[in-house]
Length: 318
Length: 135
Image (cartoon, rainbow over all chains, first blue to last red; front, side):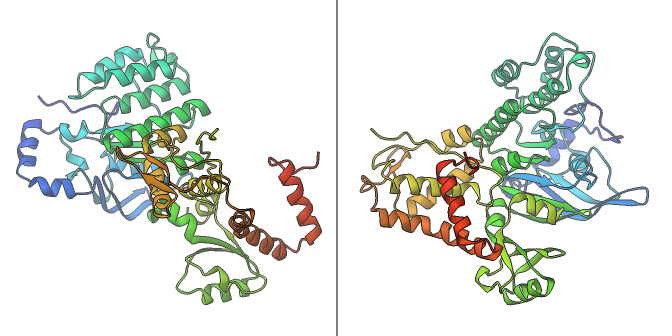
């Protein structure tokens, strides 16, 4: 059998990547089990990608540990989608390497693919099929399939199951795409702007589903979103993508507690930064500096020190 | 009658969510509203109810347990620790409010707002918590 698992519709730039399932499992069996357990779920090393002359990812390193829920933040065009596609082996990078569950993402075997759920930014479902037909089709590829969860989500999220997918609304297609990604109880969930066209109630229900997935299976989750409040609820860690690299990844709690927004004259701010060394200056805008680990009591007269919110961090670090 | 234990979280605040949970429980216990023996929702229940990361809830519960406000019972459920029955003295509750007011006072000074206007705003906020706008 030479059939690759279609956990997305069309493997973009995925030429000649279908390896025999048997050969792969045989190779994997030689690896000591301990190493597999200790390995990060996702390991990215030296990833570089350019479109023409425009660099998108530049020697990017990144790791996701099992069970981590990481929010990926970056401005429009920062390369979040490109990064997630590279992560999944859907896009060839010019340099670097991605490992998922200890395997190269370019040569993933079917058993590893079956552990991944992906919600692409652009819904890429078969438009002529109905939701029921689509799910039945995917179901045939996965060793594990949570019918109870699928049926319950289809009804809670009011996804019509008998209408061709092409005639569903954007929001309905997105909900279906999420259901498909959750259906096989994946160990790694990659979500690219999964909630963009969902109404607030479904969004909240989706977040609950994600939390349940993390509770029940210890799923590793990476998701990009512009809705910072969702990210703050569900992501324990945040990663900021800036100029082609992960500029910072840290627990959000710690960042909110360690980072302050200082406003004042440039000279007073410089004095404050010097006085609170080794505080790290995360960003400098005119009269507005973001510092990590600064000693608030060291603020000279004329410097206003306030706690920073996630929006301030987003502004400074993306 | 005991006040039911319910938490609210406000994303977008500079205060991390785990800290919001910790502070809410501290205040409710100080006010004598949540009392010894009352059972808290499990980490699972609260994480699902609030749609927040379970580690955030665990972290809050762990800190509160270390502080002696929560006690872990057999079967892993958490209850308000013994001894917390009555509201604390007003003075002690004022002490809990103090850091927030110290910060507000410092910011008001830095912003150069006259004290009487600050007090007026606080008065209005106590009466109309949503906006502080005059009625």
